Image (tube, rainbow, N blue to C red):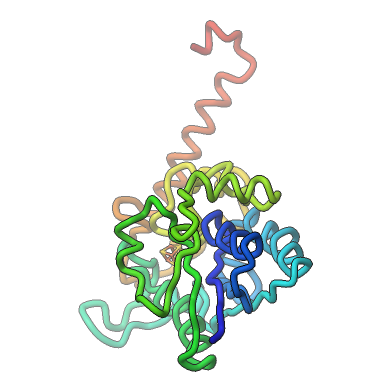
Length: 253
Ligand code: SF4
């Protein structure tokens, strides 16, 4: 039997690995699938990617945990410019992933994970980072194939965060988001997008560049807005703030 931990390097999956180490649970390796924006740029938010490679992987390896990094040949950019062959949008470029039906999950994340699991054969138990307080998700775990150590040791999401903080393994991305996700995720909340706009203008510019591509299956970045509309809104907000710059507080208010 082989034991592997699926790891996104978020608090739940890292706390799972830390629990395995603390309690001497069997663990052969941690498996991480990195979604790529293009062949060179990670799809992770840069702060999280740096945390993964500079802090978390070295920590796990120093503690005897082998880390397997998987990547798909398919990237966000390849998926974006792929010409659709079927359906109402046949002949158009695939363009933005859709909320609730993300093609990046389907094309970039799941294939390498499934291929890797298949290569290991049937005797695999997978540790999944689902916490004790996520009963609905826990009920969906396949008995004999997937196990939650957070549930076994009765650890809630808050406990998972504490375990990671104590080990110095709490991703800095939690300073501006409560979830792990690609920087181009259609489910990204306003704060995450604003963080990208403010701190990673190079990546933001790449998204705007995508918006300028003709013949897209959808113009919308998320359920309601185009990325250039979000950009205009952020620009307007930044301009308004700069108008207040230097004014005495009572006037600015
Ligand atoms: S984080 Fe968002 S964009 Fe990335 S795979 Fe998941 S749903 Fe898709």
